[in-house]
Image 1: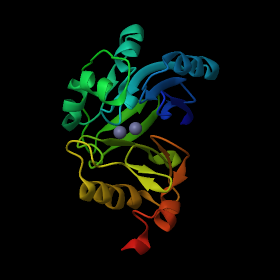
Image 2: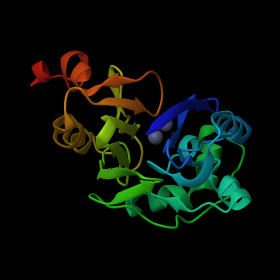
Image 3: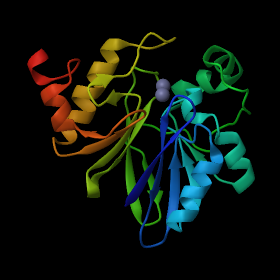
Length: 213
Ligand SMILES: [Zn+2]
Ligand SMILES: [Zn+2]
């Protein structure tokens, strides 16, 4: 599996192009906006976009979904159905976060913990990681030790939990009991900012490091 991180929107949200090197089939994770930038990246890599994957329902992550899905006839997988209220509330979100209004959409498939998603010949495992939002999911490619964790965990920080249905205890539990057991060497692409590894965060992250207890 190969990848390219494409920061989009004024929130510099990491849209991630993931593709299978053998079939050149690609998924775009969290197309928040700046669709031209995403399409140019896919063209530059010579890959064929075949699906949209969503980690959670926040507008900076899903803002470009309807337009992209309609124009290229792409299926939408994710997030978990517990984020449906965020997607149904995209109009309020655009006012709340100062985004131009975006079209609503319905995922082709809601995802649950333990589901798998296929990108060409590559398989991604789905982990339900509530806390930042109740329906947040993480995509994990075990074969290359790479995770796309959205707004669950960042380099040196964790997701906000002060939004409706956010839950700090759930978030900490998701990180410590779902993500960290995948292994210290696993590298992750967060929803914003630079990549890191779970081992690094276990050492240095002030919110979830091991010595925080
Ligand atoms: Zn978010
Ligand atoms: Zn975000």
